[in-house]
Length: 137
Image 1 (cartoon, rainbow, N blue to C red):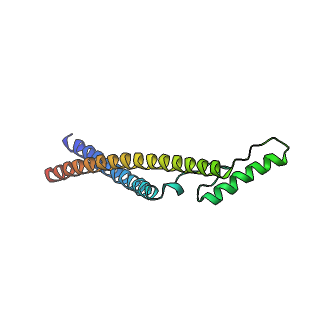
Image 2 (cartoon, rainbow, N blue to C red):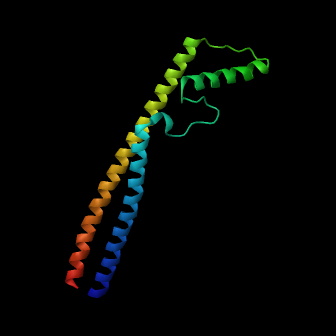
Image 3 (cartoon, helix red, strand yellow):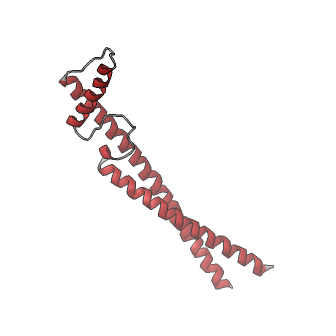
């Protein structure tokens, strides 16, 4: 009976070690992706279809005016903003995108780091426990 308990303990310990290694690898990938996103928040993340590009002011302005042109063609009354208004709209949208992506990246960095620390702790404790069981056998 003692032998089967040791076998079950070893299987449990090795399973925990395997799961922590896999989780560690996945969390490391998420951490690297978040660090890359943090270096260039304007180009990271998902941009909804049809939203104006924030890559540059000129592209943003072109996208805004293109949207207004579609409204003009459909005979809708449309307000065409002046240069100053478009510039302030671009700066506000750009600032919002940067803040949102930085927040998401920092959140992902924190979560991935905590998971990595937990994985390392679980792996090291179970691995040392498994070594003690192996020596006892």
